[in-house]
Length: 351
Image (cartoon, rainbow, N blue to C red; front, top):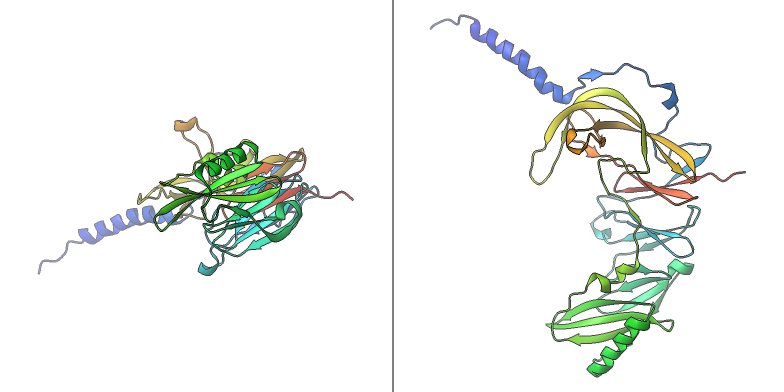
């Protein structure tokens, strides 16, 4: 047998020496910044329910379970706000909802839990409307906290009205009713619309049979009366206009990933991760906070605007970080940076 001349083991060792550090660089910190944080930022805090301040209090209003629909905020009557969130904890409760009524000073004054059902709830000023293919009811919970079910008056349920009478009633309601909306119904191959309207201080439903299918337009739905002003889960890698980046303190240089989705493997980048310090204004006062584990990227394609990402650690996939505030003038703020959480930030009551 021919003896090895010793070159191949040496070459293999050299390849291993060069290749392994390159692989491991994806899983480790490449460099650390030893420069201390500037004293001006030493007292900044993370924005969560542990935030302590002489001027502000931070309250976690809701923390949804799993991967729910966005938490939504609606303006309501009496200068109040309504927050809607999924209350699901498992497969059996995936349709459950919880609602919070927020006063004009940012205090939770009422809650409403709704078990999942065939009814779809929507807000129309004083009313909470519940509709299904079969029937409907309403409550005045937005107005006065009353959850008593009140029935709609049903017209032409037996479909005996003349077509002209039906059309005249609908025309009059569209002109004179305070609110109206349409739901389409298909049953055993037949098509109907249910015309809901509020007139003369009464909620009513008028049934109408159709010759063909009616596609309900956006201008005919109940949702047009509900103005959503804020929601969680709205991710944008750019900083909102009402938030200012004060300082970025780099801590570790590392490789991390951007996951694109849709079957695309994504890509890796090397960048500094550290603490980002921000400021906004609530009730005319500066509200300041920091976010850990942030990487800031900028490139020529968008004019070198800062883009913000959460990076859990070396080699991990990053996620977009967006600190969203909805500032109620001269009062409080809604805040979220995550699909599952919503905070209220308000001034502390003065002694």
